Amino acid sequence: MIYYQCPKCQRIWQYPIDECPYCLVPMERKQGNNAKVVGSSKITISSLNHKKLPYWGIILEDDKGNKWPQKSMTEKNVGDEITYTANENAISIWRVKYDQLTAIEETNKLLNFLPNKEELKVLIVPQLDSPNYSYFRENTSPEFISAMIDFLIKNNVDADKIMVATQSFNDNPIEASAQKSGLLSACTKKGIMPFDLAQGSFVEHNGLEISKSAMDADLVINLPLLKGGDVMATKNLFKILKTNPDNKEEAAQKLNTLTNVITIAEAEYTQRPNKTIVFTGLVLGGKDTLRVDRVFSEIVFHKQLPELVKDIKIEEIETNGRQIEEVRYNIESY
Ligand SMILES: [Zn+2]
Image 1 (spheres, helix red, strand yellow):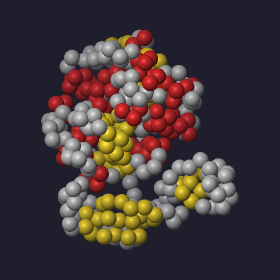
Image 2 (tube, helix red, strand yellow):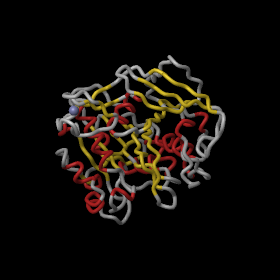
Image 3 (tube, protein in one colour):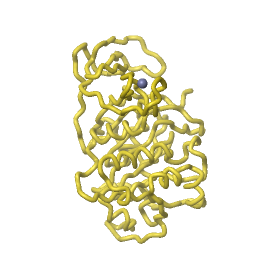
């Protein structure tokens, strides 16, 4: 796991702090590897969010001595090593522990979504639907887009090759939404000026009119904020089209065949259908937006599946990273 160490007194924190409270010097961000099980308990009594039994409560320790707890649906014994392998075609599930950057880095290890190419051109498409402050969770959060830009820059993508763009399909002017949500300042702080896709040109592809900026990018990162009762990963990718499509299922399926698109979905704080906010602590990712939305529906126990994903069988979706059962949380029952 990622941890933060003071270079002077060597004290360690598992969550990000800027400077050591004892020595007042900047902390160093470090990576621990090879997580091993150092404690394991089989749980046979159910509780509200842990109805499926048995499961195991395990304590992991990495090679730097950092320890943390985790839920496992399969039996784990002391000494077992926990490893994950990349699978580009799976839907990734990762827990946000303390910072979004770490969650994005781990998601990249699971999906290998960042191409290894010189002068990589990246288009980030955040969700920007309404002129609301970020705590309403209507739009991608400033923290999440900042973390994504930091991740790209850390991986040698030039800031001037990173574009941030989307458009409005409703009556809210995109400029107002960008300003109030904090996304505009999050981008300009990194030296990136977001733009309106509606002002650019569109090209015909597979019966769809797709933004030229999206077609020209080496990588398009669909960056939705998942919401209870909805299919935000799918809906947000429609923003690279000239208009909001009438036949949403067909458009989604065609967009999911684009090979340069990846969805990295924010789900740290989730808006319930009644608009209140709940902590879900996740980042989901994958090439297929419908499958990302379907996995999210399963995790948050949607009573009724949203129309666009109701026919997708969860058993047919391959996931990677954490298992669905380990992170399930019923957002409607509290
Ligand atoms: Zn110190």
